[in-house]
Length: 248
Image 1: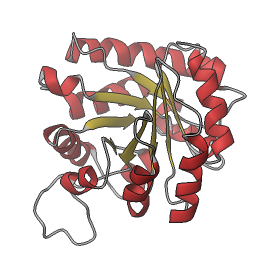
Image 2: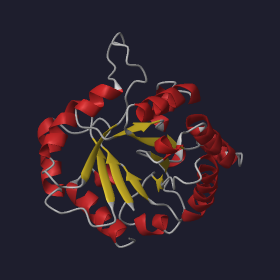
Image 3: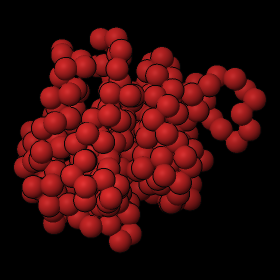
Image 4: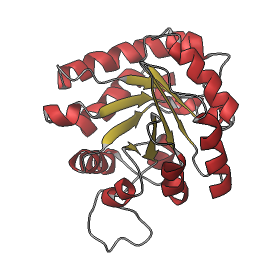
């Protein structure tokens, strides 16, 4: 089972180190893979704060597809790896919607993550209008096919997919009913099996997850949770870690 959190644009360096100190005072239970995605500014500090041997993974919220140095303000896959990332998130709906990152951009980034020897966390999810039209399955499957078609077996074994319906993310997001989630998880799993038959690509769920609804969401058949604000406090992350560990 998996548990991850993205801090988005939160936490100073001191706050980041304090969070890691509290969370890593508790071992990650056997059978659980846990990770945190700090801002780029805190990536190296978080890596250095994780005690040797502790199994909290550190990842990046994004990175550029190009190794060309002439992309002002961007960071490369090699740079985030050097700063401590073992995993890179790609395709979050906030970047798709707010920064115009279409499927072509997401695909280039996904390939760069895998070519860089990193683990790919691919985010997929439908906006409200697509869900209302009943086209959500086609929407998320098209996102997966675009990003992952033609995967080599080695790359496929370094992929996670997080289903995050856009209407359920962030402040004002509507928590998803498990009945909304389970059919999408089943469709994603079938598609991923078709694209990479032997990889066993994990499917995570994210979107207004908290300790009150986590167990019901885990009942949808997901392989773990990708959490936002409910895990920004160490106690919230540890509570969710305990819930996930019970499912191992």
